[in-house]
Image 1 (cartoon, one colour):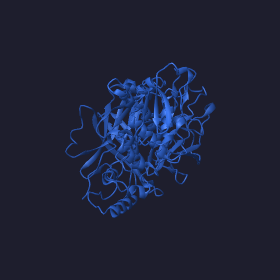
Image 2: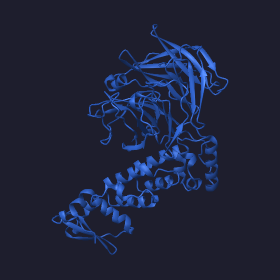
Image 3: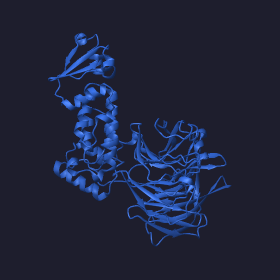
Image 4: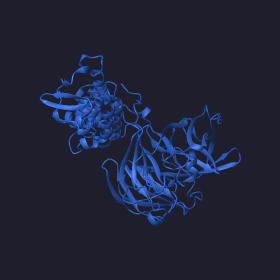
Length: 537
């Protein structure tokens, strides 16, 4: 029989009996943590005065033993063996739901989010979470299925009920190629003999864009996540660094040069130094979940950095250049695959090093950046190759001129003379083109100065452009497009630059302090996770 520690001998206990096994548990603690036992042992039930209670459920002994151990104060990470299959974890999760132990349920979901959201078992977890009505876990599983659709075992997809299958393949956030999509749809419909309400082809994920800022980058300050959904720029979430986030010599030392980017429903906080020259770095990649609002210490960086380029190309997190220990300028490239959890070393940058983040963006699965010398550099992590393009004839290819792709993350925060303005490329129809000024901002026409199509990279066209604002202010831009796309005008629409002053600029003060890129990064708002597109019958 499991007994409590000697120090708890004076507390009232109850004995839970599972088959022939007896478990002694602190009664007050049991009632505090479990709503099921709180009701059972309350004065409303005749069992309240009993000292023994038989568990009349078919429960495996080991999960129930660990359930009791957790009740006695054992941490969940000590009870879950990550080398074991997911079945054991799901049984423990089922116990937490059965006995209404919300804290344990949250603990197990956190363990699943950190260790078990893998293609080979994700559909089983999704269906199990659906049976238990665990909405948060269902959302985590759906987000993983959408992101790693091409890696899901076909056998697992085929056993999906129709409602789940349609929720997956009709979702606007689905990531996969047309061929992968068509193969899965064909095999599922063939095995189920059901061709109703199926989409014709996959589409690019529906993305919104976000940026994280604060009043200053002291780790004690509140962080603000703002979002651009294509129509509005607004505050989406507020949160703080976790308690175990590293600190400088004092909690007032700001962390500088840390890069913050997004992918899917996660934010990534990478590197940075606590006061320039202190040698005290954040050596880890931290991840914040927008679904569960939980922090995870995600990975340890191979090389400490600040003011580096941080960008996602597919599932690969690229850390390029920046400044390391002893203020050394780095040309190295570290690549982390978020799907495999492994680091690799990329080919070093062939360009001059930098101490502040140069303008960069991701286009056609390549990282693209340019410098003051008129060169555009492209890095393909899948081939581990750098290529350079010389566009010196375009005199506005300088570091701090924004590059805006005509599709993708075409929005940024502009900081000039202490003023903070949100700007984005938008498409307007002919009906709206005469209504440039709104209560929220202003629309300005874009004028193309010159264009370059590189023979070695026929998939990309670069346009130098300028915008006249209020008949006085000139904004220079570099636009990137597919050569086949008619730039700026197409099918009754035209591109404009939308500008809107930031109302509560106090929340963006960290952007003034840090010399970092202010481009918004792509993310999926959890509220849009279930968004469906129109289906074809």
